[in-house]
Image (cartoon, rainbow, N blue to C red; front, side, top):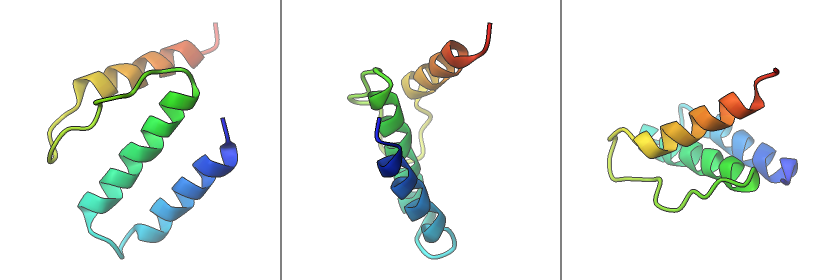
Length: 72
């Protein structure tokens, strides 16, 4: 994983807050999450859906990633 790319994405999100529409910021957050999941070996095709609907598949992957990283 390129931590530089992830950091650039996060900085872009930070700079967008209060400047760009919430929907665009949300899109950028999802993009950063998917990048992290892809770089950690998760398959993330089709995780984004239209509008502000919940994404149970993405949430399940994030939960699985979190559980996988918890100390034993």
